[in-house]
Length: 244
Ligand SMILES: [Zn+2]
Image 1 (cartoon, helix red, strand yellow):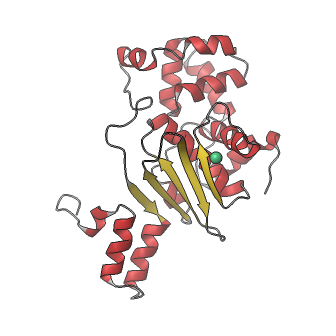
Image 2: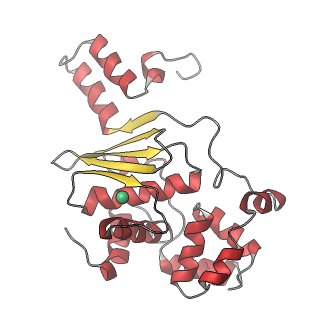
């Protein structure tokens, strides 16, 4: 499917609905693979120029990989961006550069637009801005909203700009001292700061399929363990007392 730009917001709403998310409020990605059983998600470090990738398997399935060295806000944006590729891009293998603000191809721009709307649907964004924040743009509003929607500062400000609440010039003044201001106001830093120990984990269809193939006798225990270790699932191969 090749969506036209005006339809991207509708498509984001549709995918939100199809995945069983409400049309309002923030998205939790914790159970995304339960919501679409054809999806495998890999979180692992990539080079700093790559935010993520999407590989489709020719049927309904696919793998989305996220660069886990990036801050949480960026990782969530990447996941929403890759969902666009998973559902709508024609290319079955896409590596996405880190271009949240200035994507070079139309497909990348569409994926960014989709991600922005997927994470912050316009009606719910405006309602929160007006009802909870008194329709006033200040550092307190910005902090409150980016932590509510769990998005990066850049993503939040771009949304304000696209709705005409903020000019590009005004946007710049909120892009300095982000971490210090958030900390001083009592907010956690993980939305903005790269994690100390980036995740390496795979979840979703791949892991379930490996288990199923072993249960049905198609692969040996050794092969199962090998496949799980390739997917950074040593926690399943070597379960600890605590994890049981
Ligand atoms: Zn992309």
